Image (cartoon, rainbow, N blue to C red):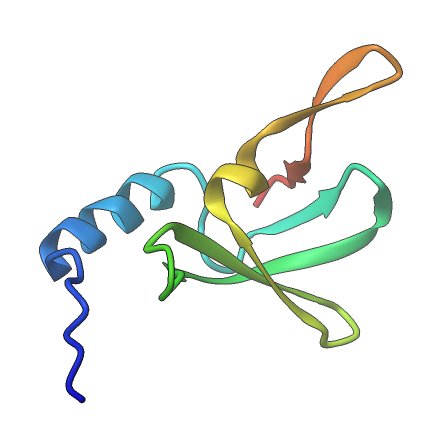
Length: 92
């Protein structure tokens, strides 16, 4: 059985990635609001195969690699009744 999956054109996917690249840079350091003493490095920006959402790939200093959708990575969360970024990008 041959099932063909209809994927979005590569040009459109690249445009989605480029939009996120304006907000975060590969190699940039950041920290998560729950663990401000843990530094993460953004390793790459890609596409989740199943959903075609843009994803940010980041790694701890200890070498654990994480993948999170860009929308989740960049969103704000409520902490002590205040909106704060889920990840704070550190100055380069």
